Length: 500
Image (cartoon, rainbow, N blue to C red; front, side, top):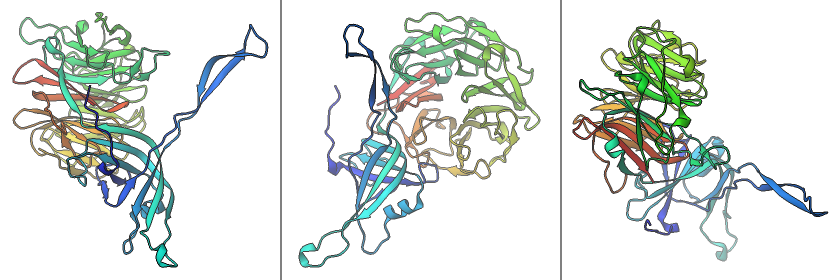
C-alpha cells in the first residue's frame, strides 16, 4: 500500500490560466489567493417502480435514473489590494473561461508551477460571483483586513499526480513497435466488459528481420497493461505495417509496403490470448499512395500516404476512398490528426501541411519550414490550435488555424526527433522525443503545451529505450500513457506504461 500523506491547507497554492490552457497562455501564480472546498454533484438517483404483484399499496424498485451531473464549484478567496487592481475582478469582468489549478506539495517551491505532488484541475471555469468584505470602518473596533472572493463554476474537475513508469511486455515483445492506440470506453459492465476506459491497448510491430522473417505482431492488453499478448497479422505476410487504429468493431493496420489494410474483430482480442483472424483489403489504395499513418475522427478513419495521397473510410472491411490525390502536395504525408469527421490536418516531408474542414477536400497550409525538413507528428487540439513536430526536434504550434506558426521550446528542443504528440484532454499533453544520442524520452505538459517537463516528474526513471515511436492515452485518466518503440541498444520492442 502506498504511503498516505494527509492533505493540509497550508500545502496548496492556486494557479489560473486566463483563456484556458494553451501553448501561448502562461499559468499565473495567485500568490495571495486560496481555494476553498471543491464540490460537484454527480446526479440524483430517481427510482423506477412498479406495483408489487404480491401486496396492495406496495411497490417494487425495478431500476433507476441518474440525473444530470452538476458543474464543479469552488470559492477562491484572496487578499484585496489597496493599490493594485484585482486580478479576480478582471477575470470576472472578462466573462471568459479560465482554468483553475490547485497545486499541493510539501518540500518544493510552491510558486513554481511544475513542482507539484498533486494538482487539482478545474477546466473551462467561469466566475459566477465576485465580492469583497467591508471596505471601511466607522470605529477602531472595525479595523480589519479586506478579502475578496469569487465563486467559480467549472465544466470538469480531476486530479493529476506525478506519473511513474514501468516496462511491460517482457519476452513477447521481440520486434520494434511502431504504433499504438487505445480502443476503449469507460463502462460499468452493463452492456460491455467493465472498464475504466484505459484497459484495451493495441500496438503493432515490424516484421522479424532476416531470411526467416515472420509476420508483424499486434501486441495487446485488455487489462490496462498488466498482461500482454502477441499474435501475428497473418494476412500481412512479410510486409511491414505503418500504423494501427480502431474503427467500429475492428482493429486494423495499414501497410506502406503492402499497399493495403488488415483488419480483425476487436472482440477476438480477449483476456486469454485467443488468436484473432485477420483479413486483407486493398480496395481504394492507389499504386503510388502507400499508407503511412492513420487517425480516427468520430466514425471515420483518415490515412496519410505517400505522394500526397490521403484516404478515408467509415468501414475498413469495404476499403478506402482517396480524398487527396497528390494535386495539392506531391511529397509524402507522414502523419494525420482528425479532430472530427470533418476537420483533419495532415503533415509530411518537405514541411507540407494540408487541412480539411469538411472531411472530403483538402487545401494547402503555408509551412514554417521548407524542403528538407519533415513533419513527423501533428496534433489538432481545436480548429485553431495545432502542434507539429519535426525530424530536427522542433515543435511548432498555431493558434489561428495555420495562418501563423510559432516555435515552442522544450527541454532538448532543436535536437533529436519528435516522434509523436497526443492529448489526454485539453490540458494534459504527452510528446515522444528522441535525443540526438538516440535515447527515447516522454515529456508531459499540464497546461496545454505552454511548457513541457521530462517524465517522470518526481523520483524514478523512464526505462531505457533507443526511441519511443508512438504514444497512446485515454480520456478517463490523464495520468495514463503508453509508449512503444525500440528497446535499449537492441532490435527488440519496447512498451512502457505510465500511471498514477
